[in-house]
Image 1 (cartoon, one colour):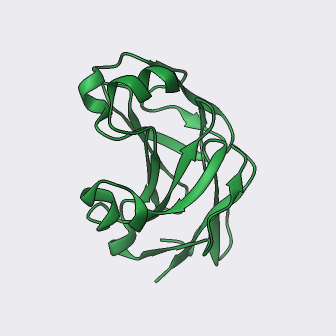
Image 2 (cartoon, helix red, strand yellow):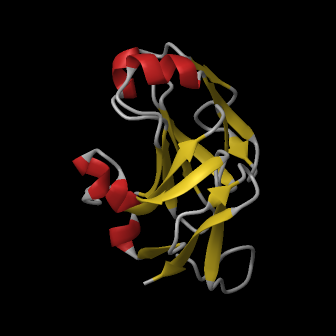
Image 3 (cartoon, rainbow, N blue to C red):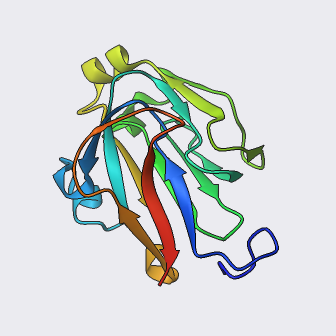
Length: 164
């Protein structure tokens, strides 16, 4: 699938952080669905603000009714899930404002969701934001940064996706 990407053979695809904060390993997320990589490979961010942007260009293929998660399919076919907070589905959309819809084409850095981190902190288990390559077992390998560091939303590279 990565072979036809912008008309030439692609080696890798770069994802930037969807939010500013502290990069952490997926294994350190306090939710076994993410830490055991049941949804795929990735990383997570402890956010310091609620402005969530597209980590990669592509089509918005999923936007939860509860506004706590969205998925983007890239031109190369990689499927990227951004899940805002842990156990935030129970918030039923409260604390989230969306700026995109399913079917929209977005560019890396476009604002997708504004999340009220104070509200999430008080009403959910965590504000941690996992970023997952949900089809990493289907020919995509997510290579993430090795050590936790401070990241800037829309700017700092957090994942390089390569074909297996």
